[in-house]
Length: 206
Image (cartoon, rainbow, N blue to C red; front, side):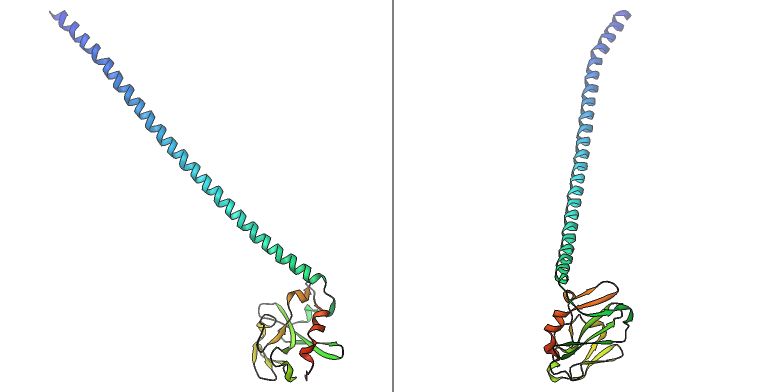
């Protein structure tokens, strides 16, 4: 009887073992499946991140190229405009200070004058020494008082730092960048520009 009981127990265990193996196999397959899903998700996120970085780099590169192209276009336009400049007046930059200096010029018998000074940021600024509004009076020229230029016709005070920058109103007639060349040592003002603007000095009484 004891032998039969032991035999029956071994048979019972033998029947249970395959069932346990099946459970372990199922659990193993499930774990592998979960790991595969996690791995795919991570790979997908990495791919998306790389794509976004690539798109961002591409956008930045494109933007940088556009800005560079814009600067080059402006530079080329300025170079083309100044290529035909004929020297009408040359101003040595070394002699310019914050105290305004006047340079005479004559066009077909009409006496003209260019003013030059160094602004507070160190930039040398140039303009015609006649007012855009008061020139016809003959007294629309400027005298410096401190850091201001004063119109001798209407008394308007104009900041020296704004010379050559402001257009319109009672201020010195600006000389555009396309009408002069700055080579680092001297500023050359175009003769054609000076001659074209002689009417501002037709009644000048400075």
